[in-house]
Length: 139
Image 1 (cartoon, rainbow, N blue to C red):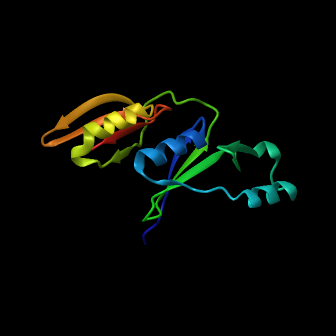
Image 2: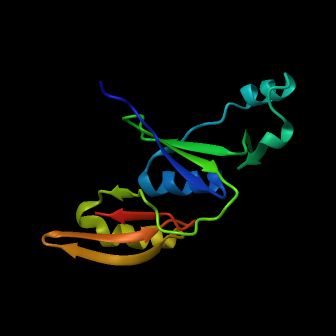
C-alpha cells in the first residue's frame, strides 16, 4: 500500500513563511476561503481570534499552505509558540542544477542565509536557511 503525505513546517509566522517558500520554489499559496471562515465564526465553530488579515485577505491565523502548480504536492506551515533552537532533523533539498549560485543569490536577496557549501565526490550543494532559520539545501 502506498500513502500520500504533506510536509509540515513549524513557524512563527506561517503566512509570511508560506509566501517566502512559494516565491522561492515557484509554487502557489493556497487561496483563503473567506466565506467559509466567516461562516465558521458566525456558527460558533471558530472565534474571531482564530483569524487574521494577511495581505488584505481573511485567513486562519495558525496555518498557511503552498502547492506545486502541477503535481498538487503540498507544504503546510503551522504556527507554534516556540522559536527554532536546533538543527532540523528533516529539510528540503531543492534541485536547481547548474543554477545553484544564482538561486543562492536570489534566495539571499529574499532573506535566506547561506550556511555551508558542501561537496562529496561529484556532488555539491549549498546549505541555506529560510527567514525563520529552517535549513534547506540547493542541490
